[in-house]
Image (cartoon, rainbow, N blue to C red; front, side, top):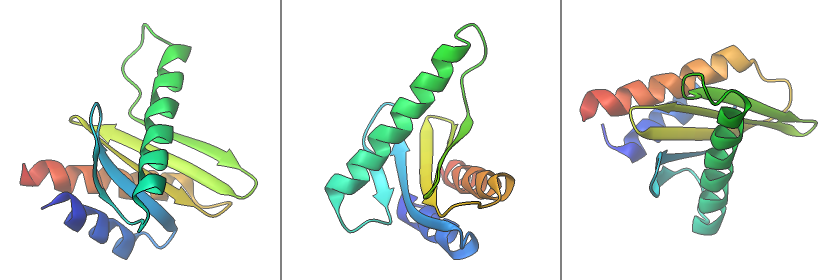
Length: 114
């Protein structure tokens, strides 16, 4: 499954997702649901920064693989696996467990195709 197909599948099954990007953990954006490339890069950069910041909380522990950052207007969800990261924005009060499950499924589908 291509990165674009994986994101398309994500948005088909996860109605909570407003915007999403799929990226390499140490590289560029592979696919995005956004029409604006600059906004896609901003979302990707925010996802990487959030993972790095969360990792600094417990640097001796395992690498952070998922997180949620919530603000009154919505949330940023990030999941990472096998060198890839998927980030998505949602509206407020979305079920975190369900959104993170969908993001991890997206990464598994991408990994299965590799």
